Length: 496
Ligand SMILES: *Cc1c(COP(=O)(O)O)cnc(C)c1O
Image 1: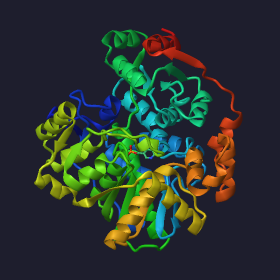
Image 2: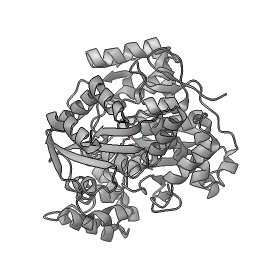
Image 3: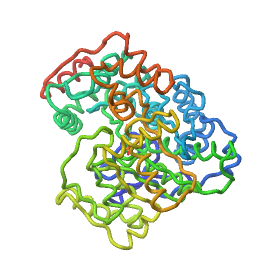
């Protein structure tokens, strides 16, 4: 009865959930997808009485069938605890007619904590279950946020180490401070002389280096990755969409069975895919509104059926969504083909070789659950400002994209279904851009921390601990290396 996971790119034998979490990617380069989607096991009115950890258990146990109840509870209890600044974990707040699902109450004040706080525990458990004796070494190149969120998750988790490389001078001052002050004896951070691509390429090369893998194994280590295609990140994200619905139900905003819409500011397509999986499990969701910034590959795809990455890469004020290849979309494509791995493989080959692919009309039928849209920088800023002026509520620049796209969709279509907006980062994390939107005349000449103070006074929200901490936390990581010396740096940290 346990759900097994198969590759999107071949019909190789399916594997257990724990094996899929350990491997991350299928050996054929495909992503792991469930052989079938589990259904919600209890009525929504019952789920609505549950705490976040209880609901997480309910949902995740349906997907991760080879974890025992005890194992899964252990993982959940070590993830969704006091590291979050609210017992609710993911509060839902109504502002100006929309429901903002605040996914930024974890240690790095962005939604990636929701999955990265639990992934390390899932991985260690998966390793034990599969007889892996090696210690897991997470290796990541980051352009800012993911690396920090991964470190915060893996810090001091027994049986793991984590190594993060970021481009020297290529991240914001606050991001640099967040990483350089990271605690945990099992964490290592190095700035590299080069850009993000240099760091990323060197990390990929290390993953592919057989000699290095052998050397590591002989010393009791093995590499793994924490990136967003791992089902161990996807499954925990399904929970908060069900939780949002339950909060609406519990507070009487909707009745059991009423439909909602969900809007997600999208980059790699992981977060919105989780919302889609929640819908497929039986959550009453009408439309999934996929919001892009000016890198609007996905908005174009939902409009035309053509996925075309051949376009300039734009730097926007929602940097975590500046992406031209949304890796997790492959899972939706696979479903649209009717679970046909040969067809999916062909599309992905086209993407790699030609930079684009076009789905068939029959496949486009399956896209009816989605609406794609994008917002420009100006629309984003105007929306953040309007919401602030009407309600005093301040949102960040990623949430702002969803806000702008969603409000325009409602105006244009008249579809006024109660709508949840995935609020993916705290405004304190992107203080400069947010002040630029709500009080541009007050931004000039201010330091990062002065901008943060200003957010606090304008919004009336106390600054989160993640910010207070970096004001005074000692700098623990000062390493700077050339990209070519990254393997040596890894070995030095592992003492091999
Ligand atoms: C990663 C991220 C996103 C994009 O999420 P995907 O799952 O990659 O689509 C949006 N907002 C913030 C703040 C993020 O960190």
